[in-house]
Length: 334
View (cartoon, rainbow, N blue to C red):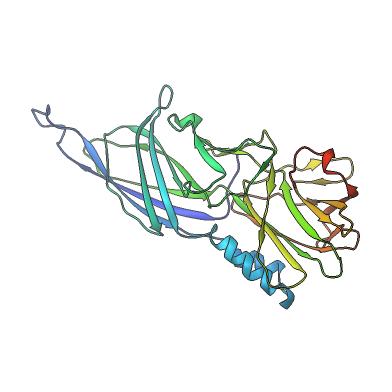
């Protein structure tokens, strides 16, 4: 399944200039043809977190949650690249990597000189993989196998960086000046749930999410859906009484809905409220829209006396289990 990216675009320009011995020299035994590649990296975002936050969290009572969420998402949906991985692969046989460079950037622009022989390459570039904590790069010595994968556990943590990737066929010709340009697209997404708990008398609230990819193939820009992991959200620190905010960074959802007997949706929040008696209520919120790469989705809810959750968006499906028993599910560790 090809996943088109329409949001969160980063621009990468590469200017290639030939240097070294010309190929018409009579004696070229001591000459190695090589190219100087200069990168100008510009991460530009079409959709800012402030747009989604401002659309959903409009009231004065949401100001604290809005500020906390902007701070959380701003570190992910940022126009600053922290690290850059550049790999150049052969285009035949097993697509072996012929050259790799890694750089710390910490800026929205950067220039590097890279010397590689004239050749036909498939070039893969990725930004912000370091410190992601959840997604790691695997089998990147071969272009067609190179992929991001998540830890294989029932419950996974939120990703900590915004991942950007690009792929570009490059045929570097001897003794010629050439220019190449490509685009880095964001490969992960942001989600948040803001809960009004006033008058509910609950003791605690835990929020998880499910329905996302667990990997990404860099060469053909496709997502992998095999383990259907449950994502543990981060609880943000709010000073406003009665309001709670949970957020996470994940891979995108599928672009086709998943239908259960009671409700259909592309992905879901799972909300667990602990009542004063110690009993728990589970509410599954099925989201009616897919979560694309580079997208942000915020859901507002009201927590009721019995611990069930009512979403502000009437298109969100709701399934409630009172007196929920954690022993019935081995997927979520509360």
